[in-house]
Length: 241
Image 1 (cartoon, one colour):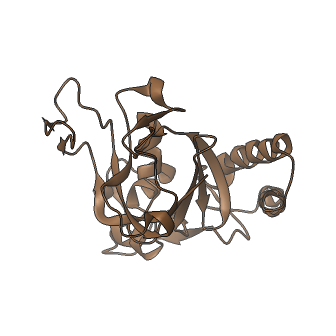
Image 2 (cartoon, one colour):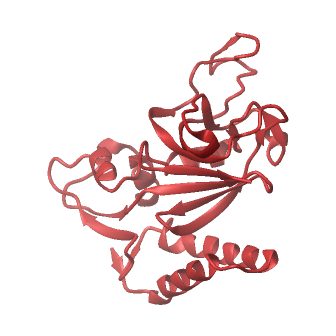
């Protein structure tokens, strides 16, 4: 499972990520992000753990191991371990099998000026997503948030705070899409604030615009991907101008 090829992937990733933290023109920064995103398909989303990578490793499943516990121990959701190891159900984990693990947590940075969410594993840039943000009067608060304990839900029932209408996931006009990741504000303008979340949407045309009541909207497939990576309490979301 531990793959010595290619060591250059890890070396290139580390060098690019170091450069990413330095001031550079926007077009150059975009090019670095694109290269880092390409590399993540190999070192992160690929099935093999590369030798010498401090962010991913191989693990031999022990009798009695649970995928959820393995994920919790590494501060990542078990869903991302299922994804990268092609495990169809958590109960399919087999003792004696070697799997790839990820050493979390994942974090996110959201930029209001560009409607962009950048995803990181620890301090390593992974990839970017286009998002929708709060409209005028309901601007998404800047500051630091963390993923709420117990706040990750699949298509939860939701009450519109403006109309008090209760939406269920089976409603044809259900607005929250595929996933809900509740956030707790812990610093800056966000401190002490709740009721905000990263979630999917039934209005994909509003991604990249200011149209929500402050929540961070994502395309439904991408909301699932981010849901599978952010871990309650440990994963932070920083909203910046």
